[in-house]
Image (tube, rainbow, N blue to C red; front, side, top):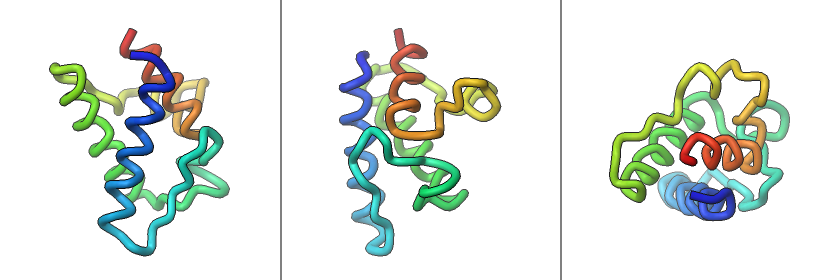
Length: 95
C-alpha cells in the first residue's frame, strides 16, 4: 500500500471521528499534527484515532495488523508528528 492511499484512509478516519464529535476539527492535510503543538487530539482522541485507523487498515489488507508498536511510540522517526510522517511510516510497515 502506498503513502497516498494511506493518507486517504487517514482522512476517512478523520471524517468518522469528526462525525462522532462536533467539537473535533481535523484538517485533511499532510502537515496536520497528530501529537504535540498544534494537535487537536488529546490522549484519548489519539488512542481512538489509532484504533479506528488500525481497524480500517485490517479490513483493507484482510489480515491482522498492529499500528502501535515500540517504533511508533519512541522511534526516532516520530511517526505521529503529522499525517505525512504517519502515512510514510505505515507505507513502509505495510510494504
